[in-house]
Image 1 (cartoon, rainbow, N blue to C red):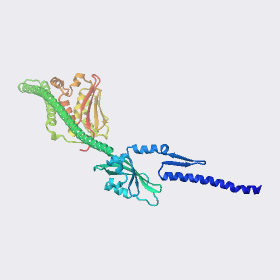
Image 2: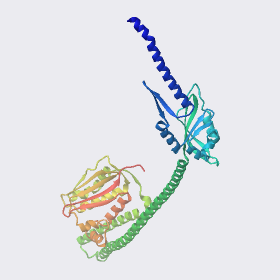
Image 3: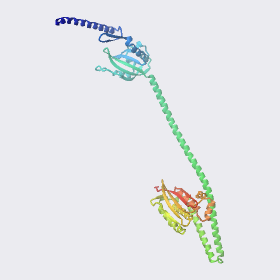
Image 4: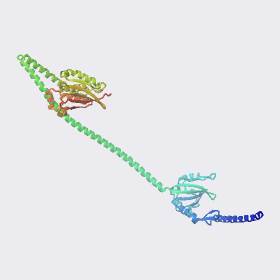
Length: 457
């Protein structure tokens, strides 16, 4: 058996050899056909057979895509000769396709762009992949066309070639230029609008300033008219209130002079007391008029300084304590000792003395008057509260703008609510404060006024 197998082995080997030689011949024939360019094909061998894919089934779609694409496609050899280009590239350079193939790619590239391409060299079979550069291509009519060049290098059948795709940037650049011009126009418009807005804001601001100035002027005119009317009323009242007492004093003095020898001693004494009181009241009123004129017409007399409020209240209480005790009225100073105001000393004394004196005159026996303070932002609020008879709304509303009848009645009743409160209002406002009153008829009154908290001038 072994000898039989040994004899059959050469026959089997000879058969396999013949089959291999047939396959080799078929492969050589396929390669020769392809090399001779008789057909374009792709040959794939499997275990049993060779499969050939010709142009119609393998390459046609790719070639159509390259031919129809809206980008230039170029293949160069290593000396930059154009081996292939599609119609789109020929259209870029404005030449027939047959006149482009075989020419040098450098013929269509500007000098600056050539430097980028010339730097491409193959070293140790190095392959350049997807190198992108923006370059300029010259058309046959001299027009300079901007393109984006995507360059790849490869070996094809042991031949080194460049594969180039060129995207025309003309429309893109034109759109960018339009966009840039439009952007510049918009920036210029924005600048002009900004200038216009600033001018408009300035004009509005100026208009508002003029409006404020006009309103201030109107207010000042209104105040001047009111002050003028007030001045006329005050002058009429003063004329009446000064002349009437003086006429009475003169008449009484004349009676004493003429009838002194015939009058009884007690009658003479009563008449002298009347003369003394009338003269004293007249002097007091004149003093108030002098003070009023001082704040109205002598601004140099105003000299604000730091004042410890509690001490000045104490001084006023000491001055008026005798009158308060005689009328059985208690005075309470509950101002905080560490509170200081920025005001004129003489004016502050006059303010406190007039308000407290007025409260004493309108408070019944057994009543009380309290002076207190509180801080409100940068102001000190001073309250003079009494338990007196209070006042009606009509009197309260006209208290600091007294008319002729009010001044006259106050003078006749010896209440001192006329010129004295005019002085107080003037002094308070001169020191940067304000004054108001709250009162319920039959339940007392509270006079409030503000002064600046201590600051450094």
